[in-house]
Length: 223
Image 1 (cartoon, one colour):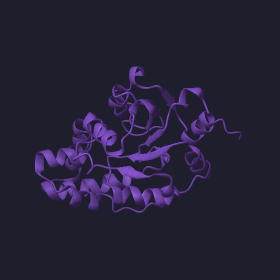
Image 2 (cartoon, helix red, strand yellow):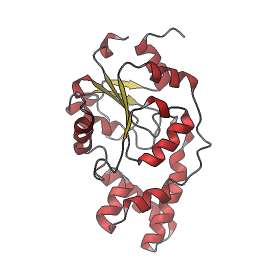
Image 3 (cartoon, helix red, strand yellow):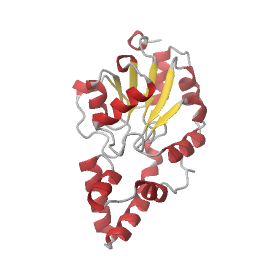
């Protein structure tokens, strides 16, 4: 084990574009569903719906958070609709499965999505058995990453010593509160839309481009 990670006993992973390649672009499918939802909600054209969607994502962390704040949208109804997508674009990665299985300690998903969707994705990736829990958007009372509130709830819900936790995330801005709370932070800089927003070395301990390769390195596994 890389000595910089020997103190880690809790491994926290984002889901989308972290546990599968950003090039799979599942968000393109979700984006279509979100634009449809917003267009129907607001009675507007698709172009305006997409503009609203992106503005809320940037301003509030998730499109859902903006819709709830400004339009009183029911989160369960919204999430059920937008996550009703096919998952053929992603599949199993034997190396990644083996490396996550080998990590010593607890493993938890921290996502701005919801648990039913996360479970579907994890099953498709062959990773469902690797994680003890999913800390989702409902669990953080709809206050998404990068609000520190959700990280504090994660800590309290699972009794995590954040000084002994590592957080892997493709959205750089979501690492800032993690670092402020004492976590070791790993930015998967893999081309995610908006992944580079607010990136700063002060709160990024490691910048990587391939998760399985990096885990192989820190575990000291021969390939």
